[in-house]
Every structure is written in C-alpha cells, then in structure tokens.
Length: 75
Image (cartoon, rainbow, N blue to C red):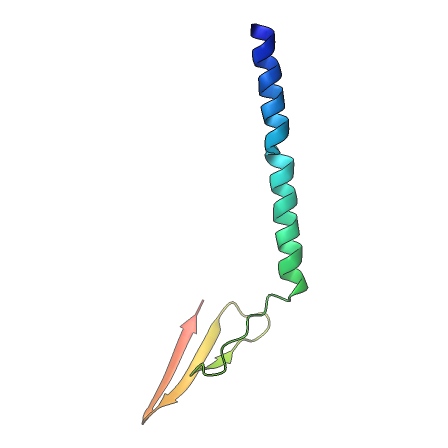
C-alpha cells in the first residue's frame, strides 16, 4: 500500500508540470511582450495626447478642454 502512494505522488507531480513548466510559461509570455516592444496604441478617438519619454517612469496625458488645460501624470 505504501508503495502505491509513492508512485501516485510521482505521477501527479510529473503530470502537473510544476515549477519548470511555470517558468517556461513566464519566459514565453515575456518574449512575446518584448517582441511587441510593449507598445499599446490608444484608440483613434482618445482625447489626450500621450507623452512617453524614453528613460522616464511616467506617462503624461495632455488635453485642452474648453478654456482649461488638463495634464495627468501616470507613474
């Protein structure tokens, strides 16, 4: 009886994939993200101008609305 429990555990662990499979998934997803340069395009009717300078950790959204100037800083 003890022998069959050990065999079951080994089969379950091998079938589940475990850590190596999880690492492979993370690597694939990171490679796919890097292949797209991580750029997400805004919809054509997006009301803000996006300012995203290389090396900066913020994105600035700018817009004029009526007589107001709106600036949103996202970090």
